[in-house]
Amino acid sequence: AQSVTQLGSHVSVSEGALVLLRCNYSSSVPPYLFWYVQYPNQGLQLLLKYTSAATLVKGINGFEAEFKKSETSFHLTKPSAHMSDAAEYFCAVWNSNSGYALNFGKGTSLLVTP
Amino acid sequence: GAGVSQSPRYKVAKRGQDVALRCDPISGHVSLFWYQQALGQGPEFLTYFQNEAQLDKSGLPSDRFFAERPEGSVSTLKIQRTQQEDSAVYLCASSNDPFGSYEQYFGPGTRLTVT
Image (cartoon, rainbow over all chains, first blue to last red; front, side, top):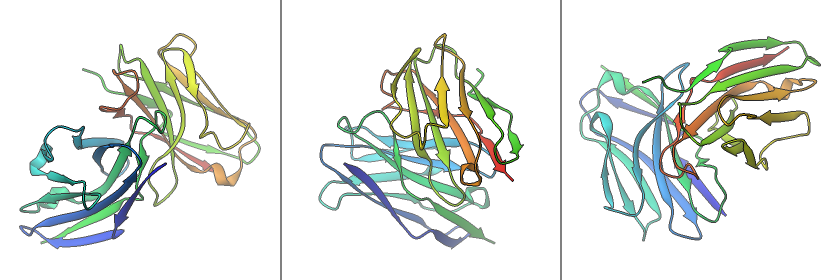
């Protein structure tokens, strides 16, 4: 079985401040981990993914995430928030024992204030 | 190139009506997924196709839900006798790897409202 927990359904940061969105996973075998972003009335767009290579993963729009096996975490960070980063963010996990589907967390809504 | 497209983007159905939602995946992608996203929730898996074969339908919530991909390209998700609890955004995703494990490309979704 696998699951994803995103801590904090809503996160608010000031423009220019650090963005930290938390994701913890459980997986019985080595997982692949993903962060997706969803803007209003749009589909999901992949920000970055971890597929057992480097543990620090860099994605689009200045985001990065670090896979920490000991903490079963895959937190998403960005050094300086932009207004355009306001969106819903989803962490997802896949492993070879759990079929074909991505298993998503409930999402974190990021608000960026001027 | 063109991404995943879905139609209609919005659908209002009266309870008890049948609906059909269409997904056009990225050309050449072998894997196609359907997800259901309830308001304020993450997407939840419904079903998976590899080419025309439906390899996993474990997420379909009831036998009122049916999906097909007869020629290994376009897919249709059909919901019979819609209920209010079916109201959600239905997302389609495609992937060029057989298991969709590396990256799934999502369409904009169809927002279904059952009144």
